[in-house]
Length: 284
Image (cartoon, rainbow, N blue to C red):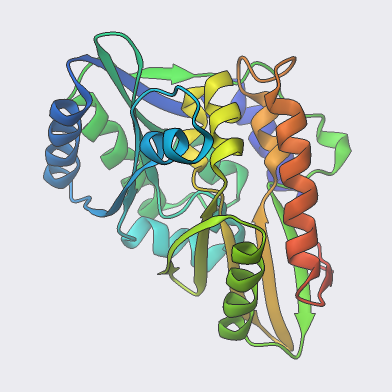
């Protein structure tokens, strides 16, 4: 898998981490337009999360309207997760809709050209998903690509996901264990969702989201934070997105988001360790 990370570094020089459009208008109006554009391109919402309202309610802090549209898995998502379960860190795709700029609503998602190549799952199905996402946003306005402010050192060996292997376990049991552990730590959960062979768990901690999206609203392409579990020969693989990936986005380094991401990483590792698993690298 390290070679996929190196490939992603090279591709990242030409492509972006996320894509977005800015549309004049209030969030409710623009969100309706975005949902129609997605549907016209064969993509439908599985759920819409009012993250901004949740942040304001739980933290009491001022925060702009911010919605997350989690899409239903389709052929591209299923193919990606079947080739590499680590693809579950961004699947099913999330479209973020926020009003961080007065009079403007921003709609965006991840750039599949980079992320699918990074994960080693690029192919006809994922190309199709990327094209449909781009076409959907393109119906709303001029597409903007949010390029990383920097690229990670390919010699670091950092992977896009934190992975643990639990010998003799079943993925369905690990899902219940992870959900219980996340709930006990005060993270909010939405119902899990099947993406090919992987079961994706989507937890969120309002304070983490407030800090991250105050530094870089485009980080919503990876929200809520993804955990996943998948059956493997001899046991189950459990994993979660590597929070430090977000430090390559513009505006994150040097902001309070770095300490938050370090805290999130510590919590995520503790949750994964609660399964009794051991650190895992693909191919071992």
